[in-house]
Image (cartoon, rainbow, N blue to C red; front, side, top):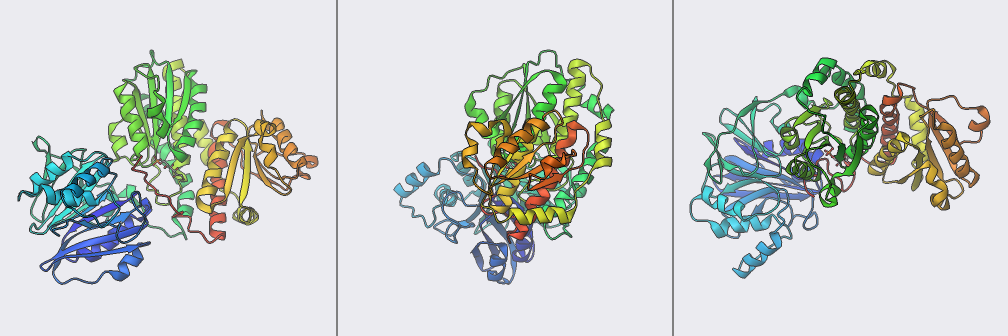
Length: 592
Ligand code: F6R
C-alpha cells in the first residue's frame, strides 16, 4: 500500500521507474517522481499504471538525485493533483510519503490560518507545507520539528532545493536504506535493493536522517543514533516470473514452500524454539490476523486446541484492540501475517505486549516490523509473494500452525511431535488436473453469485476459497456453515444457483451431503468437493463431483485450498481480469 523509493546517483529518473515497478505489488492507483538536476526540480505524475508515468518522464540533463512514489488513494481520489511527490509553496521542499497522518485536518486548518493554500486533498501535502513553516535554515532540525507534530504513520523521502542529498524519516511504515559505492537508495521494501547493494539498514520508529553520496546519518529525538548494517539475503527475493502471472507462479510454489518448511523445522528445532517458554500458567490462546491470515488463524485454532486442550479464540486483527480482550500473562497471542507490516496486526501486537501476553509471530517477511518484535518468530519460509491474492503463504501458514500445534502440544501435554504427516503431505501433494480446473472455472465465471458451504474445517476452507474468488474475479461468493442452510440462507437459492459443497471430513460427510440435497431440492446446482468415493445414486443428482487428493486429516486443508486457488486464478483469467492486481486492493495494508 503506497511505496516509496529514493535514489542518489546518475539518471535517477530511469532507476526510480525501474524500482517503482518492483513496488507495484504493494497496490497503487497513481505514481510520480521528482528529480533534481543543476536546473532544479522536475516533477512527473500519472494516474494508473507505472507505464503511464514512464511514457511522461523525460530524460533530464545532469540529474543526480530523485524520489519516487506509488500511491494507493486514502485521502482524495487517484488523480495527478493528489499523486506524490508533493511540494511546498515556496518550492523548496519536495516529499513522498507512505502512511496516514491522522491529525492532518487540524494541521491543515492551522496552516490555512497562517495563509497557506492547498492544491490537493491529501494528508501528505500538509507535511510539505509544515517543512516550509518550520524552515529555519537547518534542514535536519526542520524535519525533527515537523515530524514531532505528526500523528499517525509515515515513511518519508524528502529533497530540499539547496541540499544535495535525501532526507528520510520513519514512524510505523517500513523504510530501508542501502548503498553501493557513491549511490544510495531509500525504499519501502528491500526488494528494491536487488542488483543494487549487498547490505541494508532498517530504520526503527522515530528515526530520521540524511543520506548523500558521501555519508548516511541517523538521528532520533535525542540525537545521533547507530543502526546496524544487515546482510541482504537475495534468496528470499526471487521475484522473477516465468509464468503468465505471479499468482500462478506462487500457487505452484506451494510444494517447494512445504519442502522448505519441512527442511527448516526439524523436531529438534521446534523443541529449541520453545525451550524457554513456560506453558504452565497458560490459560488461553488468541490467534489474530486479517483476511487470508485470519482464515489461517481459524484453522490454526482448531489444530492447537486439539493438540493442547487449551481454549483458543480467533479475533480479526482490526477488532482485537476494540474488543477490550481479557488477556495477560496467562495468554499466548499468535499473530499471523504474510507481510508482517499489516497495521491492524501490528496494533494487536502492541496491545498484547502492553498487557503482558506472550507473542508468537507466524510471518513470511523476516525483516518486517512484526517479525522483529514478537517474542517467538516462526518464519513460514514461503519466499516472496508478489500477487495481491495470498496463495502459497496461506498454505505455508497452515503448515507452520500445524508445527506450532505439535510443539505446544509437546510442551503442554508432553505429547510426541508428529512430523510424519508433513512427509505424507509432500508425497501426496497434488495440484489437480489443469483441464478439469479450467473447465470448472469456465462454468463458474458466468455467475454473479456463488455459494459455498461446509462444516468444521471445511467451512474455513470455503471462506478462503470464497475470498480468492471474490478478490480475483469480483464474483459475489458467499460462505455458510452447511448446518445453517435451513436457518435462513435457503431463501437465497433459485433455479440453477451454484452451491459448492466442501465435504472432506469423513465424520461429517453424510450430514453435509444431506444439506447439499436440501439445496438441490430447491433448484441449486451442486458441486461436491471431496476426496471420498461417493455412491452413484448421489453423484448422479449433483452437477459435478470434484475430487481432491486425500492426505492426513490434519493437513488436508492445504491440499484442499490449492485447487481452489487455481480455480480462482482461471476464473479471473477467463474473465480478462489481471489476477495479480485486483481492483482497489493492496498487498501490504499499512494503514488501519
Ligand atoms: C487475501 C489477502 C489479504 C491478506 C491480509 C493480511 O488474498 O492477501 O486478505 O491476507 O491483508 O495481510 P498480511 O498477511 O500481510 O498481514
